[in-house]
Amino acid sequence: MINRRHRIAGAAAVALTALTGCAQATMPAAAPAGVDAPTVLATVLDRVYGTPQQRQAGEERMWLTSQSAIAACALTKGVVYGVTPYQPMLPPTEPAPGDLLGFAPQRDDFGVAARIEMLAKRGETPNPGLPADAAAQARWFTAVESCQGAATAGEALRVPAGQEKLETDLVDVLAQVQQRVAPDLPGQYASCMAKAGIDAADLSEAYLKVEQKFPPVSFERPSDPTTLPQWPDAVAFEKKVAAADWACREPQVTKAIEAAAADLQQFTADQASQLSQVAASWAAMPGLAQNLRATVKTTAK
Image (cartoon, rainbow, N blue to C red; front, top):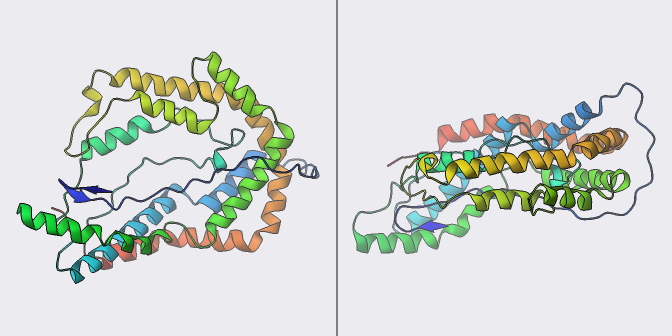
């Protein structure tokens, strides 16, 4: 996405896996006595999705690689495109596999206020290579626009090789568990949220309702959105939706997680090699990002 007044933003895209109904699975054996189902789930999620630090490192690795590729392409067209240091675009969040109602985490909010406030107070970073002369700017934007395809070079580096397939397989397993033990959860959730005054049939719609409540905010220059008159009501609504979301799901979440223990143990056994490879790659991600940060020449205007 190009902001012609300030910079080229090679923003990192966050890939979210959505999954609909799956075939009825054979009922697995119950988990051995003493198994802590929430811990089993948390362990699998960490191995598949990485820790917050590891995911952030993946985003930085993607950013620096993509921006460097754009800069190299722009240079061949006679313009200078500066690679700016990585800055997070989203506050840290917990994984919500497939946005499944039975396995998404409890939230105090959806991170919308935090994201808007973070981006607004930071403002957009002008690209160091953008010329001051208007005619030169036009040539610069044309050249850099034509190099946006080069950014795809870094997209595969955001997550370890094999992570997306492993995530899909995990969501498959969890979706089958939810369908088995809480087949009515989607309908019950929509009805419950409606009674709370929120028209949302799933987590994506709940997030969208929260986002729509916030006032428009420009990120071009640093500003404080918390001073806007609509801000307090929007923040209160975000917390209301998060509270209703959990109240409408919590009884079924506990049941789904307990029911998933044996399935997750089987998944861990079946995917042992892939889980080990992906987890090891996640563990290496901060070091790879640090090395890349040391070798890529970044500039700030």
